[in-house]
Amino acid sequence: DEIAAIRRVVDDLAAAGRPIPEYWEPKVNPDGSLDPDPLKRYPRMLHLHRHQPIGKQMMLDPRIGAIVSALLEDDDPIACQSMVYFKPPGSRGQALHQDNFYLMVKPGTCIAAWTAIDPAIPENGGLSVVPGTHDLAIQCPQPADGKRSFVNNYVPPPDGRQPVPAVLDPGDVLFFNGSVIHGSEPNTHPTLWRRSFIAHYMPSTAEEIVSWYFPLHDFKGRVIERKASAMGGPCGEDYDWSKLEKFA
Image (cartoon, rainbow, N blue to C red):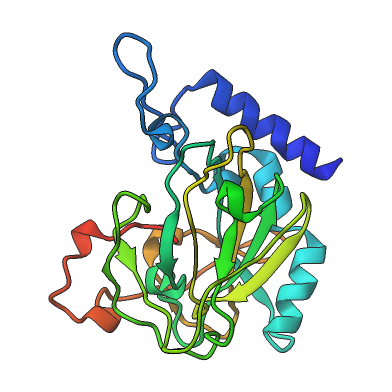
């Protein structure tokens, strides 16, 4: 029932196709036709918690908070971000990457809670993760294959390690930290979408995060103040940050 509720909300927004400034910018050709790239009509929807009550409800769900707190060794989690991926058939995937390259949580790292709205399987571009990379340092990405990935950042797995599918049923939640290398392949299924709801969290002991994620919230919904991370990170000061995606 909970998954059906968020599916109704995001499907209604998608069907209406009305932009939500800063957070969702679907594009339709002037003649009303769709672009051959389905992600132009159904791009990911950012910061759902800022414009849809169900987004904030899911991001601050106490069951999620309890697990994130345990993974943080009983530190209090701070909620940073929420977003929805639609990923209709024919959509490109997202090249392997590490979340904390984008969030720049310091010290420590972020944690993702990745909730499947549809079944997430290899055929519809389900999530894959590289086991054993949770302790890896954040890497400076290489260029990605633009025919298969809608973002241009790619982090190769370490030698001897390969991505494995995280097969999920609707309502399953996968938790992983900001060092884990993960990504997805294109959706090649003829009919099955791969909708998902993703939220990111940071420990209360962390002092910095990229300002794109402000305001932050604790699990009582209160705004939490932190410093903005300086740009730089593993790519150094000369990296062209104008090309960086603002979100993981």
